Image (cartoon, rainbow, N blue to C red; front, side, top):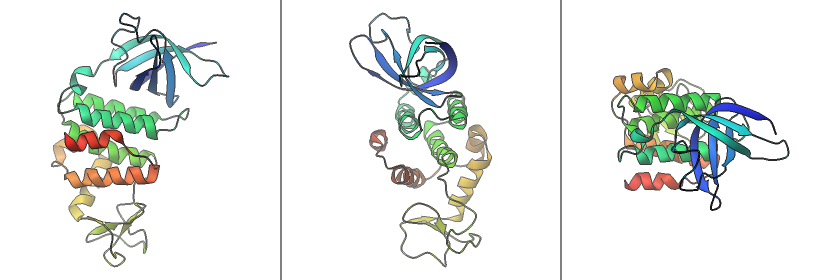
Length: 243
């Protein structure tokens, strides 16, 4: 069983027996990986505070071609975001982001863009940008990375440039112009389309300084689109709604 190392963010963990934990890692070059942390469930263990949500780690691990899971031998903390994430105004947003990454990112497929997005969000959180803003930034970019974000420049039916309002198709796959619109639920104003456009052109910090707070309905729209197209129900989304 070869020994290797990678940088990673921890995006989920669960106790699997009285001694061990199963963790999910968003790695820099190996995509999403599940790994066993031997002894991590004990009161005193070699991992200490390393296995906290979104801790940036240097992971040393063993693997075997016939086994799906890595086995972690050592975890070094590169940077901890525990203080920022555990605040009441941040915790539900980042639990939601963690659930999306761990459930909607394909395993064993390079996810460097999502890794970099996660790094950018966490470092921007440390600079005082509200988690609610970072959540919608994440939703837009995660959908973009997964190839699911709609074209905000033209109608998906007639292919003409969007000028007035736009309507989101009932299957969430694209936008319709005023001529092609019928009874769609979600209507986007020019200001909404401009908000999306600016997010896609700017860093999280720059976007925050340039844009006003996003309407809550845009976050709701993106959640519905993500759940519909990825065929999942986010448990943390409903905790977020009640917070």
